[in-house]
Image (cartoon, rainbow, N blue to C red; front, side):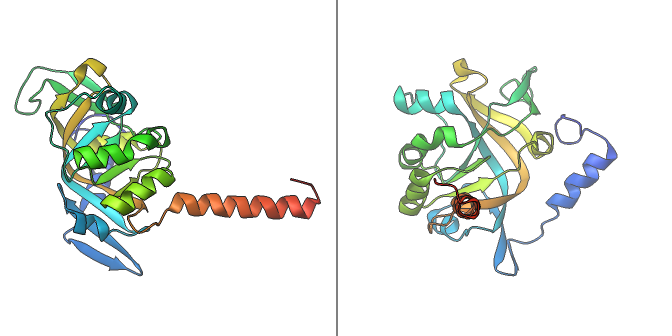
Length: 235
């Protein structure tokens, strides 16, 4: 699959993108789960409507953030001119190209490959990111832990999961890079992406204590204990 921005690539890629983004509804129920199309930013009521197992498509704006960004923002108390209140952040350090400033590239960067990194490393920053900056949604890979779940319950947030290895597809959902801050940390800068139909993403953690990742861990632990018992081995 090509790694270029939307509008480029072969016919198969364009058809695949159209199939995923044909969502003429705001909420659609399928069994007990729902699909939500969210125009960012959103408020607390909207994020608390999300439940584990639902799917989400994001529109308008998405911010890119990673380890170094968070360390500088919170451990070193650096502030940003970007307004994250009510928005979603994605754990990423994107591969971008330097290009002349234009309407398509207002800060001189064009997206080349926007992938997602493992989220758990950034667990300790979730509460501060929500409390100080007003972030509502975290998009990432692999899930997060109990401190994040606690912050979601207290302040109203959710975790949206992306399947690993989907960077080429994710890049087609990004229209342009609208703004950037903390660019001395490049590529772990703070990025502002203009997006269109970013998803569907799976709600892996919600504000009601639900976590697909915790469920998997409990299931694995239970199966492990059963295997050990069947072998007559001491733990």
